[in-house]
Length: 184
Length: 171
Image (tube, rainbow over the protein chains, first blue to last red):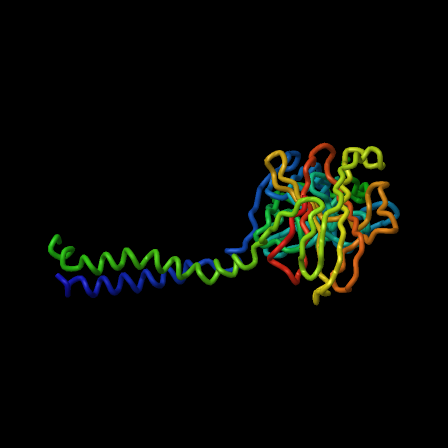
């Protein structure tokens, strides 16, 4: 009995060891952000943020105050209201298309990206993303991930995410957006 | 099979005992560093002077002002005033004040305002940022913008890199 079990037991333990080693989470998984999914037009609640995306548009030119944003690509304009729930937030947004992440543009001075939001308050404004001109033809354009997070470091942070089909969005020649403003 | 179990019972018992031991051993390298980093708060009543990071520190006043009176409708302005007497200057310049509230069942934190969003102005006789690197005493005042009527009993957290993980909770 003992000899008959020894070899299968040894093989089983080796298989278990490989399984344990291959399934051990890496830092990227251990420290991955907690994602809350939502849709346009609905209030979304994460641990640190609340957000409502009002509209999503594509445009060749964006105007914001005196700033006129031209680009060789196209702009993705996301109008949203975002609030901080438990800690002050430093809003950071990005759009991931396929395997490529595009951070919100820092070119306009008064976009909502990079704005600080005090706990218990919310602001409304536009996130602007400068995307390649052929973005609509790229893999992943039908399921782009728009994310808002509360700081520069997303590790173990709560993140709000909306899936966007860029190919169904209206592409306009020129869009005028309002500067970000406090909601109070 | 019963005979096999009986013959190997001590090995099986050892295996059952060793599995939780292995889990604990695996967690130890993360758990103790975590314990060393997690804030260790010391509660301090208003007016009480405590030694912290080489300074005598006291919360002398903590006011919640109606933001409507300071051109900040929908908000309140929390004004924290502290007395700081540095007797052993710290090596690190990092020194931070934050406001905490655990009202309405939610723990919330505010950073001090770098630029006031209300009309309240810190008088010139007060320092507007803390400094524990220079010997001497001064009065420190910082403001926090909070939602109107949502913060009634705030707590000020005072921390210095030299004294972490110990932090003061003044209220």
